Length: 498
Image (cartoon, rainbow, N blue to C red; front, side):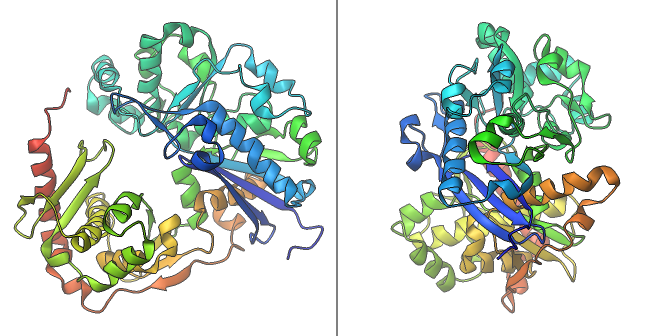
């Protein structure tokens, strides 16, 4: 238990399905955790998995006020649990990447004048020009992507400037769609935030700057100068730079916490707000990656669990324990939503001859899903230049990092030991670390130095003897197999529009 005078540092994560918080003390030990599940605890917003999927199956949004009300709830939970806000020296956070929030003209003044006697969602219910924010699952902006690439000089030129060719989920293309489809709402917008900087604004009591890391996933930032790229702004919407504000370093202290939170919850007046970032960078901070480490984040496996294991994780795990490594050469590639690489959607199953098949047994389906996800990650990592060498560790994060049988498949696929941290919410944990580091960053203290006291990741599983000899896991044959599978997917998919 932390000493009564020990300082605390908070990390929040505004993810797709829930809002989470972790508090760490000066030794970076976790002293408090909590969460709010959007679907079950805020049913009035009618989300499934934290989102609304529209009739075209391409447009995916989340209600902005749901995120605001979730913050009210989680802070209320902490207060009711007796959490001592007066010991919080700094806070930071993360948000699902690419999502955008459109603040109505005049709302910055509302943020500055928040009345502690009312909840945030009451005070901000009229504060957004767009009530439903496009999120990372949205793939409805192909037209805008095509226009951006043409205007800037081609896909490669966009990639040279922003780090990526134009992608549908990226924020700039979502902004362009809103400007074209709802020009009156764009005109009524005073500031455009990412989910991360939106969340920071709720704590800061004014519009918070976008950090370099999260800003690089918008198709708008010059990743070399770390400033907005004029050519991309001009191809997106008019007067956009003034709506975005200047980006800042990811460890920047944005300012003091809003007096609203000081009065309502008892935070100290000198509590600092450190720039919020994307959930992936937040997770990397929580894992404290070193050279030779590979981070893996969990993907949702609930659909296959419900279909093939009667909704039981115990049955799901039992199947993984009793089916053979390599799955008899059968592999599955599962895209429940449109993916970037490859540009495909749907479920694609292949037998050991790389022939597309209609289905597997329930047991084969479960292993095909888990093994296929990790096999694809290994191939993609190696194509990017990562090497699986002696000493390589895989660091697992997310909810599935507590499932030893899923971790065993991961270890076998990468032929490397898998390590986990005690806290599944690595993005929250990383942002708690970042809050502490933000206080000393200006004096030149590196992130690694600031978090050296943090508990080390713990060994969870090691590769099954002989797993590396399974033909399906041979890197050369594996790469060929998955490449062929992707080609088969693309050859049967509708022609791309660009």
